[in-house]
Length: 183
Image 1: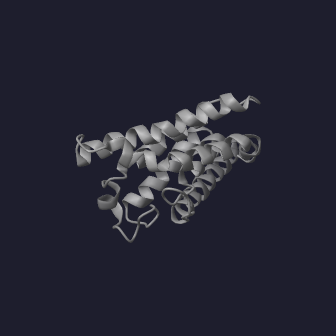
Image 2: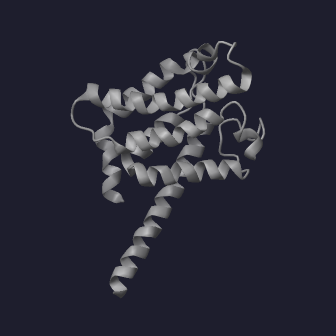
Image 3: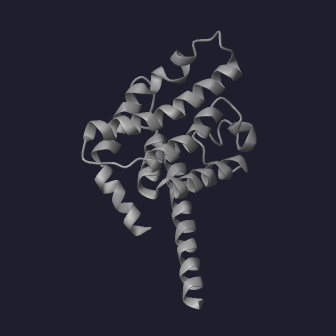
């Protein structure tokens, strides 16, 4: 009985450690800006996919939730923080839909079973990433008004970079899935 309790505690500690490491990876990926056309690229959505594939949907959801909680309470983990504000004020700004989309993307990418078919894997990751942009544009439209060109403002500038990140994730799925063996 004691052994079972000890094993459950050590597994919980392992999950907490992975969630913390994942939230740190998300925070770091939000701060690194890579020159890309037409807008600079962060690797945040890539890291969301990696967390989903590598951690699975449950631990992935806990990890992204922890990251969002860190940002909401004022830690400067989001891309535009602290320069553009922090905490709940920043969170409820124009990027809130995209940030909430991370939750859906990590669940979707974490629930899929990935095989050796690159096209199927690419399409699965494209679907997961699309969830980020769908929620992002819905929130953006409700915030700035639907008469504005929402797609041109909220998705189009980022599409080339997203395709690039999805391709990287697609070609590295086997390596990413090795994370699950550590958990």
